[in-house]
Amino acid sequence: MPDAPPIPTDPVELEEMLRDGKRMRDTLANPLQFKTFIQNYHKNVIARDDTIEVQIREQVQQGIAQFLKVDPKALHRPDLTPGANGQARNSHARKHGLYNKAAPGAAVDKLWDKQVDFYRALSLKCNALGRLPDGAELLEKLGETEKIRNSFGTNIPADGGFLVPEEFRSDLLMVVLEASLIRPRATMIPMGTQRVSLPAVDSTTDATSVFGGIVCSWVDEGMQPTEVQGRFMQVTLDAKKLMAFLTAPNELVADAPAFGGYLDGTLPQAIAFEEDYKFMTGSGAGEPMGFINCSAAVVAAAVSGQGANTIIAENLAAMFARMLPSSLNRAIWLASIDTFPQLSLMTVQGAIGNSSPVWMNNGVAGAPPVSIYGRPVYFTEKVPALGTTGDIVFLDPAFYLIGDRQTMQATASPHYAFNQDKTAYKIIERVDGRPWLQSAITPKNAGSTLSPVVQLSSTRT
Image (cartoon, rainbow, N blue to C red):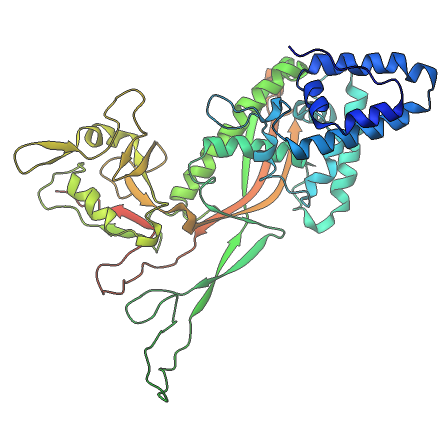
């Protein structure tokens, strides 16, 4: 360990040290040594002249700022230290991709430090709990929250309830992203109103034009190109109401740490599950329009004689060939978990009797993630079962639009489970989803139609 640097005895010597990059690097390299330096300087100088304290604060800030410009990696940053998975432990960078400072809930962030306190306050408001040590403070904060909600007027749907702070909403969605298949890969559209219309190209063929009517012509000098008119349309996102409902024993609600763990562990998972399910299979009536069986999907034909409830290598090759070529670097496979036995054993026979697996991994520890033709496979129970159209889907999620209303509301009631001494909670979010393309596209070579959503026919005999 290098010798401790000499302690300055006056502001001039301190300034000289702060401007000396090497001395500052040696001092800051050891946090304990830097703390000792500050304490000793305080004893030697500040005690004799209390007006110097203000000067030191300014000079230290300037010196550290200059030092970081020269060597930003010299200081240890625990909040940015990579975790075991190579990602930063600091969740704020990820969360702030979801946090919207303009959302109505951002106005109440300053009132609440812990999510569990917000829900405990709801229980107190509806008289589900007795007296709590911090009850008066919680109810006062809830009253301020209600005033802020009312100030937004028509910007917040009239469902009653209390506006969930934006910090808590974005924290919840961050966990939802980790548990979801579709939301983190789709195209997200923040919705400032109940309905948002987005422009879309009315494209059905690339054989004679591209992007809904653009024609490029090779013309000689003085010749007039073919007159064309582009076709455009609108895709409308209309926020649907998703309600999460749960009950909790009042003893658990009164125990802040335990109740906080219960909320953090269950609520995001439930919302993520239901969102994913409807983004995949929703009908569009009072719920998102799922991409399975949507109008833009193409269905690859099965092979005659392959057998009912089967998936063979020829099916996967046929599906791959129907994906938009521009989407191949983003596309993923979604498969029902009951397709696993067939996919895991599927091979392609070689010319001399050898065979190779269709997918990678083969159960080897440390092998690459499961993939088919180089694209990742995700098994889920949210798509139809084996033998049904949609049991395996080849999808480019970027062509799926998700509109997020960016408000959540919560209410509590002691009446639903009164005889069980439980509090019922209702949390409402508004979200919509639908495919961006409205039809499959005929390629330039006039071959089979292509789409960012490819499914396998259920007709397998």
